[in-house]
Image 1 (cartoon, helix red, strand yellow):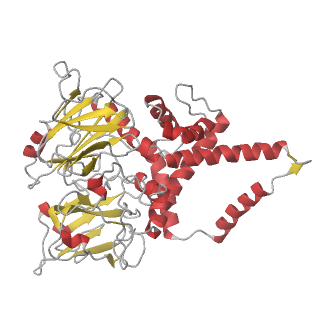
Image 2: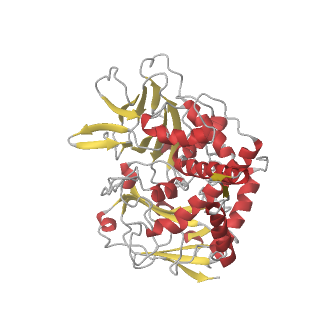
Image 3: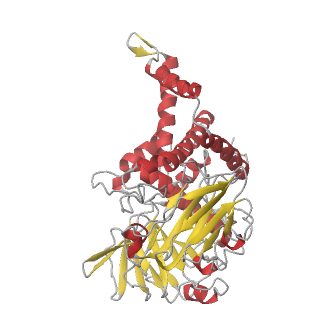
Amino acid sequence: MFATPLSKRLHVLSSALLMVLAAPLAGAQTQTGSASHDALVNAKFEGDYPTKETADTLRDELFFQRAVQVYLWSLPAVNIYAMKEGSEKTYGAGYNVLPIWKERLNAKTKVTTPNSDCIYAMGYVNLKDGPIVVEVSPKNQGIFDDFYQRPLTGPTIDGKAYLGDFGFAGPDGGKGGKYLLVPWDYKGDTPAGYYVYRSRTNNVLVFFRGFFTDPKNLGPTNELIEQSRIYPLNNKSGAKAMKFPDGSKTPAFMLFPHDGTYFDMLKRFVDDETVDPADMDWRGMMAAIGIIKGQPFQPTEHQRQLLDKAARTAFNMSKVEIWHDLIDQPLARYYPDRQWQNVFAGQNPQFQASGSFTNLVQRDAYFTTAYATSPGMVVDMVERGAKYPSTWRDAEGNFLRGDHTYQLHLPPNVPAANFWSVTVYDPINASGLENGQPLPSLNSMDKPVQNADGTYDLYFGPKAPAGKERNWVRTLPNKGYFIILRLYSPKQAFFDKTWKPDDVKKISD
C-alpha cells in the first residue's frame, strides 16, 4: 500500500495542492464535508445503544482523528528524526560523524528550508550512554536542539539565560568554547570551563552554520568547522576520530513522510527515546493508534488504510496552516501593508508566547516547513542572530507561481551586518526548489547589480528578464514556490521598520 515511490507521491500531492491554491473549494466539496459530519452526529442508536454499524463507524472515526492529531503534534519529532535517519543512511552514524555541505547546501539534498548561503554542518548525538562534549570552533553560529526541536537549556551568565544557541548568539560569543550536553536530570560532575546544556531527549541535534565573505573561497570556513570535536565526556582519549563527510558531493534525502509510513518512523523515534512525564497524555494518544514504547507496532490492514489517510489528511492540514492560517496570527505580519510573514510570531522558540498555551497553528506551520529553533532565530537581537521574513504571496495577495515573472525591490542599505539572501523553496516539501541553477538562492556576497540609488531589484521567473541574469532566481512553470529573505545579524533599521522590503510584484505572465 505504501510502495508508490515518494517522488511520484510528492508530484501527485503537489499537483493536487496547487489546484487548491488556484481556486477556492467548490461549494459541493464544502457540502460533502458538512454531510460527513452530519452522518456522525446522526449515527443510528437503538434502545439507547449504538448499532454495530454505528459503533464501527465511530470507532474508525476516532482512530482516524487521533492519528491526524498525533501526526500534527509529533511533526517536530518526526521532522528531525527523518533528518537523522536520512543523514545516517548516507553519511554514517555516530557522535563523531559531522557532515558538512562544503560547497553549500544545494537543492539536491532534501531537507526543509535550508540556507544555501552559509556552510551547514549537522550531526546527531545520543546521551543514552552519558554526557557528550562539543568543542565548538570560533566564528560559527549554531544550535543545540532536543528531538522535539526545543532549544537545550543552557547556563545563565550575567543575568542572561541561554537556550540552544552557541557561537555568535551563544555564551562563547563566537570565540568558540567547550559545551557539555547532558540529560535533563543529570547530577554528575560538570568540569569547570564548560557551558552545560540540558536535554529532555536522548537525541540532540548539533547544527553549525559557518559564514564566508567570498563564495569562491569556502576553504577557510570549512577548516574552521573541521576544528570542532565531539566526544564522550568520560572517554576523550578513546574517542572515535572525527569524520566530516561532504554533503555537497553526496546529497541526502532527509524529509519526513507525508503518508502512513510517517507512523512507522514515529514508532522508531518513540522506541529510541526516553519517556518524558510531561508527554504522558500524548503518549496515550499514540497508544490509542498502536504506538507504545517497547511494544510491537502491528496495525491491521484496515488500520493501515486509516493511518495512511490520516497522515495524508494531516499533512494537507499542515499546509493550510502555513499558507492560510498563519497570516491571521497575532504579529504574524511584519508590516500591516505587506505580505511578509514572521514564522516566529510571538518570539518564543517553543511557541508559548501567550504564557498559558502552546500555539499549535504556529507550531504546525513552522515544523511542516522548517527545522531547528533557538532564541538566535526568534528573539530580536540587534546585529546578532538572524531574521527570516517569508512570503508565499505577491503584492496582490495571490500565491507565487513559477509561470509568472516577479520583481522584488529592496531599498538601499539592507540592514544585515553579516549578509542578506533570498531563497526559493518548494511549497510542498519545503526543500530548496530544484530549479536547475547551482543554488536556488541569491545573496549579497554574489554581488547582484545595484541600482544607482543603492537599491536592488531582484527577479523570480522561468526566464531572466533581459540583462537581469545576475539578479535572477529561476522558477518552474506549473509549480508554486515561496521566498525567504534572510537577514543575518539584522541591524536596528529592521527592528524599528525604518527599512522594509517591498512586496513581490508580478511584472509579467
